[in-house]
Image (cartoon, rainbow, N blue to C red; front, side, top):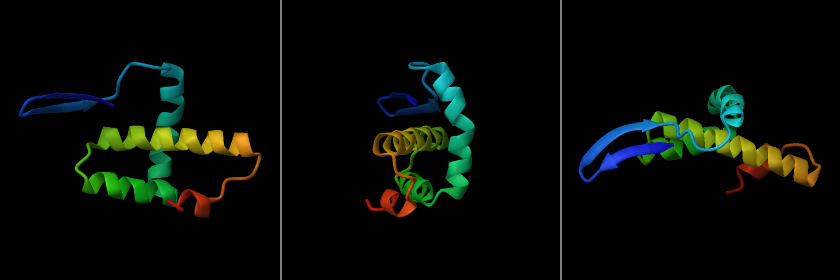
Length: 88
């Protein structure tokens, strides 16, 4: 996410154009679905919302968390375990 803040001015939160556009586009809808159905990401969403984060920041955080889940599954060779994701 890209913040548009300066001093006391609080602007909109945009999705940054830095990085892979194909990866961003490929993770956007899975991120939205995970915000409704994945317990670990729902817990993260509630925590970020309580801290006053913008909705687009929460979606970007869900996308990043999904990427970490995928990397962990590929690296370990074991299936996804939601209890392990909620361990923190």
